Image 1 (cartoon, helix red, strand yellow):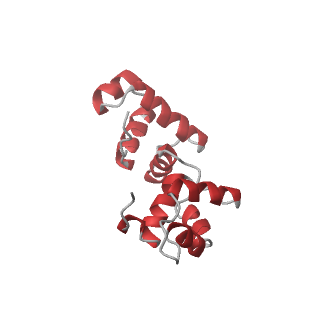
Image 2 (cartoon, one colour):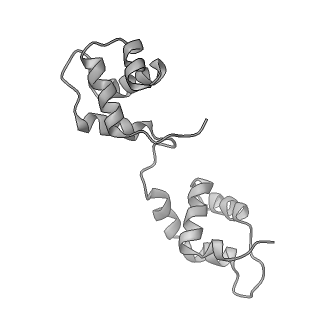
Image 3 (cartoon, rainbow, N blue to C red):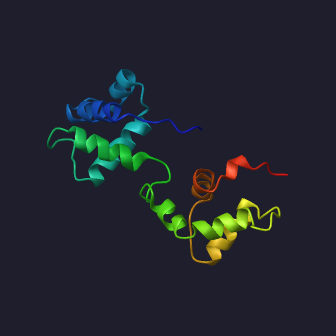
Length: 141
């Protein structure tokens, strides 16, 4: 199943309906969210200290719930890029050696970085090399 970006306002609407005491089935009919999704929103909000019978949900709560629902969570934006920036020149040399030879495959570069203790997702490495090393400009055979 594909990942669908959820707007903070959609989460806020669901949490407000939960706060008013609507059933999950009624919320499902009104918002189009499944009862399982409603349950996930409530669980994330509870982990942030909100209780359905307590105070009314606000935008800050809904925004934090939305952040915690994003896939691959845990690592803050830019953390991988910061780690890779320290090795920028080495990565560039691995991909496009100064002698004009073919260079290493990106999967091999990912493996070599892991050996150096630089653990980043492959997708982050790919994004970094496209942005900073001109990786997309070279045609790979």
